[in-house]
Amino acid sequence: MQTEVQRPRAQPAFLKAIWAIVWKDLAVELRSRELLSAMLVFALLVILIFNFTITLAPELRATVTPGVLWVTFAFAGTLGLNRSMAAEKDQGCLDGLLLAPLDRSAIYFGKALGNLGFMLLVELIVLPIYSALYSINVFAPGLLLVVLLGSAGYAAVGTLLASMTVQARTRDMLLPIVLFPIVFPLLLAAVHASSGFLQGLGMDEIWPWINMLIAYDVILSAAAFMLYNFVIEE
Image 1 (cartoon, one colour):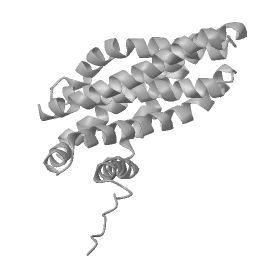
Image 2 (cartoon, rainbow, N blue to C red):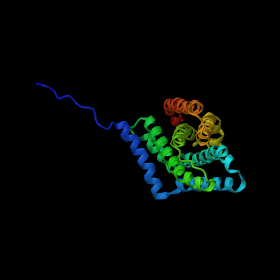
Image 3 (cartoon, rainbow, N blue to C red):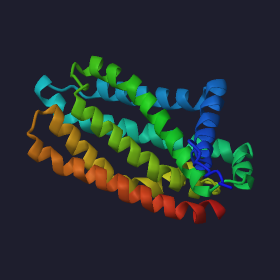
Image 4 (tube, one colour):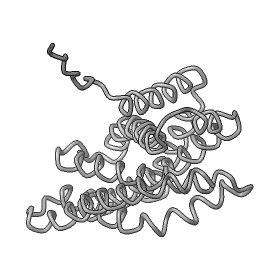
């Protein structure tokens, strides 16, 4: 009698758990609109302050734009990371996730993807406003790739560190202190790569920075994946 060979499921439980966490974050945000509104207002205030305090000649805007953009993205992303994990802790959702029968790494990837999605949504709104204020085209395909790579690395590292600092009383101050030194190579590479695309430099000058971004994303994401189980248990 032949036994029927079981086929692997099309959607493993691990991916279902990741998607459930991402969907939970999106559903909560759609009801409250606290996280995105805070990130967006903060980002718009930063670019407006830069716009009205720094008067630049048109030929100098391409050199300053990358720094302004990544300062905006970094601070808005940090605010989002803090609020995302603080809400999980204060509402008891984090304890529920830890009690659920799922791999701890699924929690990490779910939270990281959710944070990345919120960052990208804010950036999609900020970029056209910035382009209009500074009269500079920031929608070059290469620049959008840099924004994606930089945001992915920022969310990957930030999710791990936000999970570490969420238990502290001074988590709002502690996260930037811990996060910014670690993401400095990421921001440095993102600013240089963005500047290269905006100034029309050759790809031979830009590729080293893009390679640095990719290497940072891969190495730090792998490290966060391996360390998250120990971090979240603490």
